[in-house]
Image (tube, rainbow, N blue to C red; front, side, top):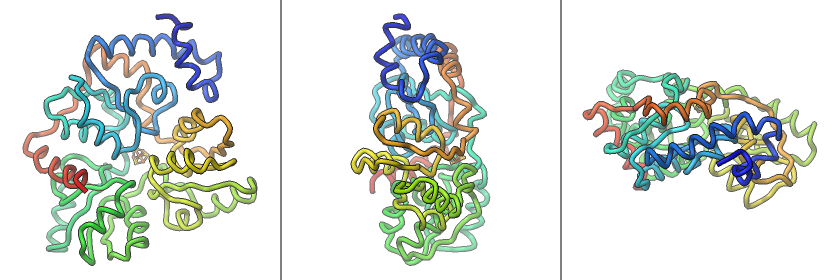
Length: 322
Ligand code: SF4
């Protein structure tokens, strides 16, 4: 394969990657496509991965929920998770017999690190009988202490499915507050925040509306509640993609991580994307050279203690069943 042969792939990203940058990406893309065949590997990429990963080497793309679901369907022997560590752990929980690799072991998540399994045990003691709903953006050890998991895409549905007046929802305080407002269920929260979404403010939304008349504002539910209230629509990254695909607003802003807008814009060159950029440094640890290295050396393998895995898998599978 040559750089010229890869041009159909460049067509997918030409509206967000200038031609002079493409030769810097093409050799790694070519090598990764070949290595995937040799290793019987698939690449799962989160919506926050950069366009050359998302559009050019990934086999499955989506939000945490989609990646968890699709991870279960693959026949490949190896899964490379282009995302952060908790996502790789979730893929491993659902595919215990497969080899799961993460290109950079330091790709963590500030939100996931805000809570430990011991914290969850203390909450269970303090609120006996109150179900614990845990966001997938947590370690396997935290999931293992929980009754059921949720994502930003299904949090409301999961809470409503429990049919109780009060739940504990961990660790994202803003997601929990947004779900409490939508459902009327009393929610005990934890003071964890996503460092990307907590930076958006209601003043940002108002400024965007003043500066860009007619703009449609889509917000992620990890944003503070006052941002979600001011937005035209709030939903997971998958729900935002769906909104843009179906409604095709002339001008839009996605109040979420930077690469998400690039990835959606690549598929909608006719839509004007306004991009106030909040970057996730953890997501950006994954690069094409690191994915290539992961497949060349079969590192870094992600494992989960079998005792923890059994309990954590139960919480994830309960979510997937709803
Ligand atoms: S965007 Fe937020 S929740 Fe997602 S990995 Fe980065 S810090 Fe964690």
